[in-house]
Length: 88
Image 1 (cartoon, rainbow, N blue to C red):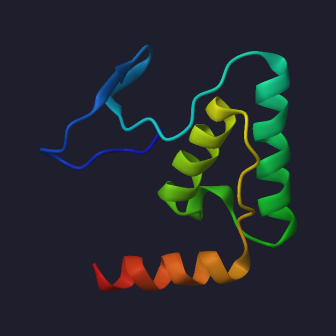
Image 2 (image 1 turned 60 degrees about the vertical axis):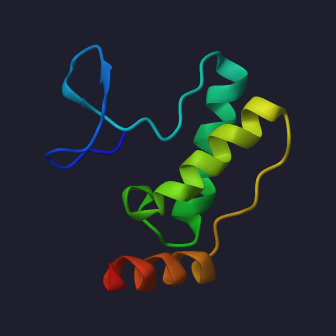
């Protein structure tokens, strides 16, 4: 989940008030394990998963739903995200 700013649309989720933007949602141990492995790979390159580009989590979610491999999140992708975020 990503916290939304005032005035942005959001989804309601139990126990999250008022709600947020869902970036990645999976259920069932095999899919959850794949998400946790993706988080581990991100941490292994020294990036806090909280700081990862929201687009990467959406990408991972959509690829998992389609049963396809996702692109790895790299330091180069992360630095590009940080530059885009600084401009906006």
